[in-house]
Length: 208
Image (cartoon, rainbow, N blue to C red; front, top):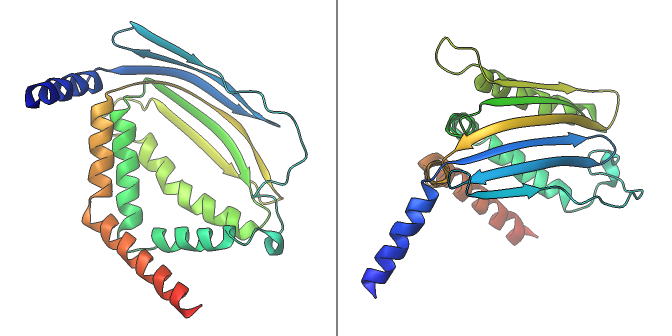
């Protein structure tokens, strides 16, 4: 029994250690569209993915709702997210994870162009301030070679807006990505921030 489990674990680790290549394009105009191709086991496994075309219907997106008419559950979630991002050291640790993930993905080419606008200009400014250091960090890797990553996310303070595209050619090892995500989730900074957020949420629920 133990031998079978050991062989299965070894096989799983071997598969996860095999590089994966992904080539894809994602666009956002009135609806999302794009295509994705995945190559695994040195090209023996090939998968093509296309997003399903959704029916066009009049819906009010969460970024376009008036400030006073957002769903009741959305505001507590946004408050918890902001508290989590403002926890000591959490944002820096999150940016470090994103930088490590980008390096582990081995981007041969990544090009992103998006325009984002919210109904509230303050929310648009918050998103722009949050993405500004991330853009600089990702587009300036170590070394003298030019970056393969080109990211341009522009804020639009005139009103709700979301359109653009991203195209990427990546090559990565799944086992390395799993190790990076586990290291982030089990880091003292993230655990401390999660405990603080859970304690505040429990105290708030008790007061109600």
